[in-house]
Length: 220
Ligand SMILES: O=C(O)c1cccc(C(=O)CC[C@H]2O[C@@H](n3cnc4c(=O)[nH]cnc43)[C@H](O)[C@@H]2O)c1
Image (cartoon, rainbow, N blue to C red; front, side, top):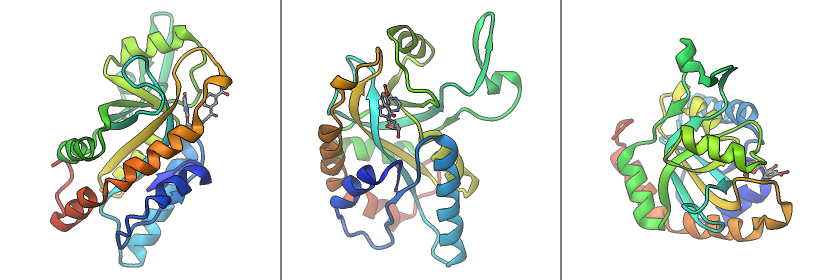
């Protein structure tokens, strides 16, 4: 499990589901550091002869109103880099339309369904951004481009790129701490979101145990 900061790591670790082989790391803020730290952890585990079967990006996030209110839990059916591309006179163009790279990773469908059923998490796209959205206009533009988006955060795509490089499936689970939109630090509910993260991960043990037991191939 890869969170951004130690407070998120502790919220996930507090759920203490005691699964052998589970490690929770604070991998850093932003997609680049999250990718580098996650890739390092995956490489180390592989070199030790105990490769990971699943990578989970977890933490707090901004939620798109009204579908992902503050305090709700979201599981990504799509992890998309929302600002990886070029700004043109006609608007934003993702790198894939420029002919290179990737902007989306898809977690295993069955696992996403099982996580949602076990935790009550809402299913939808989670966007990865390098700049936190601070205006209603940008929030609306993101939702126009990604109509199924429920949340935005800053690490999921980086963690997913590291997992993909190692051929390991990925999940992203986020608890909503603030609405995506006009900047309003007074509206953040980080404590509530961390509590929701702990509660959600507390319900995940059977899902992750059966995933590891069946060792299902990527994409199932
Ligand atoms: O200064 C601000 O206005 C501001 C607003 C929301 C979040 C931040 C952060 O610096 C937190 C970054 C940290 O938390 C995740 N996160 C939480 N909410 C959001 C969000 O609305 N948009 C993007 N990321 C968010 C993120 O994954 C980072 O780890 C500052």
